[in-house]
Amino acid sequence: MATQTLEHAPRSGAALPKTAANAVGEALIPYRWIILIGLVLAAIMEVLDTTIVNVALPTMAGNLDCTTDEIAWVSTAYILANVVVLPMTAWLAHRFGTKQYLIASMSGFLVASVLCGLSHSLGEIVLWRLVQGAAGASLISLTQSTILQVFPKNQQDMVTGIWGLGIIVAPTVAPAFGGWLVDNYSWPWIFFVNIPIAFAAIFLVWTFLPGSQRDSRAGRVDYLGILLLAAGLGSIQYVLEEGNRNDWFSDLWILRLTILGSLALIAFIVWELSPRNRSPIVDLRVLKDSSLAAGTGLSLILGFGLYAGLYLFPIFSQGILGYTPTKTGLALLPGGAATGFGMIFCGAVMGRGVQPRGLVIFGMVTFIYSQWLLGHLSSQSTDAYIGMALFVRGFSFGFLFIPIAAAALAGLKGLQIPQGAALTGLARQLGGSFGIAIASTYISHMVAFHRTNLIAHLYSGSTALADRLQGTAQMLIGKGADPTTAQAAALKLLDGSVQVQTYTMSVNDAFLLIVVIFVVAFPSVFLLKRAAPGAAAAGAH
Image (cartoon, rainbow, N blue to C red; front, side):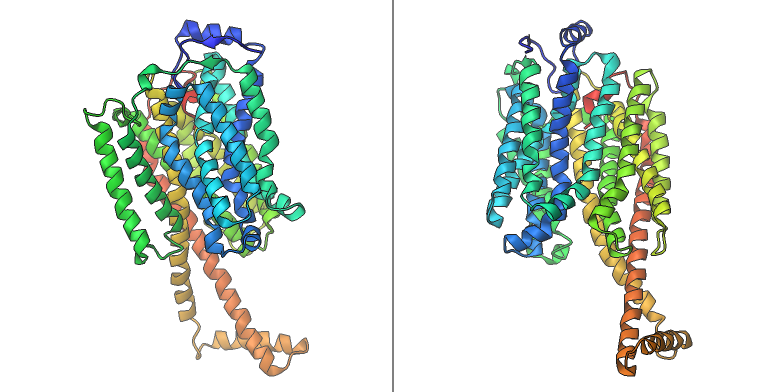
């Protein structure tokens, strides 16, 4: 067991002095790879629960006797708590110590997972999903920053790539894995699956990771900042999750929460930047660094592209191509593997001095190309075409996550690093929420738009329409249908064809919207600074 204590341990991602880093690296040679396994397991556990629950929602709605709108709170509650706590993780790690907070987070996540699986009502499971989301908020940022404590700088970029493989592949395989669990067992198993993962992660981290002392300077609590942050982000996250379902601002609660969230966030920014606030919960002054500001913006659109794509593809594959949830998940697997390869490659070459800006440019161009391919899908698209587009998409992400994180934190030092890492992580999470909300709303509007346009070409005097209906009716009559039934069925088949084309065109438009957003954001890449080896490990979240 590793019993030594890091007397001046890095504060949630702050770099150790060179001599101390070397000393720690040498001291932990027998254990650091074992510690890495525990950290990767903890990170996988958190990202797995972000997406695995979605495939079980219909089954859960039936079992818990609630509507599909009500059961959506199982997902919403998790994300709400996650987003609110995420910006505070650096401060909490300073106050209680990185190892202590990490163990507490994993333990809380484990207990909440068990109680989610044992829930017998909607109220119960929503409560425990809130606890689970709050506990899980720290797991990615703490695990990635802990890498700096146990690995020497010449290995940090490579190890971060290995760590990143888990956090990218996990949400990719989660839908297929969750569908298999629900089909073969029952929905509580999507939560019970966390039990062995959590126990293994807690054991490895508790046993082999050295402890770190708490930072006495973090003793003052910014209660006003916490309150404003929770009210602002909680309200905005709720609006993003529920807005499209409730027709946005036509719903009084959506309007009220939008106003509340906007005012709370404005007040939060003013208070955090005020000279009277000597212990801000989030140090927004670090955004004066142009590279961090650019990296935070790029993280926002990166989350947008990642989660919007994961939302759009199942709509097309299951609604248009007739894929099963399992086949949809399997279709995403090669892309997830490509992402992992790209991240490991980037970590390796950055460790040899390759600068992240060039890698980000390649990743942006490749991602834009993949969205262009996905923006030209049709009901006749082959598995090979779809697989290639998804593979290119996954490969491009591998060249974005680590390099953007490394470049964003390149100009930061000491305590600024965990604050910057928390901001980029928050931006990516919010980007995902914006991506899903905007994609959902955009598709709803484009479906109505395209359907109106297509139906406008179907008028009673159209020869082509008459020939199409007559041919379909004759085919059905030839199969034994009577003329009246055949005519009605022909009209229904025509409406189905219009519906397929409508959704196909709408999904294509949504993918092309992502292209536009990434093209507009592309110039910000040139604001990224040069990064020193090891910077990626400080901020991959």
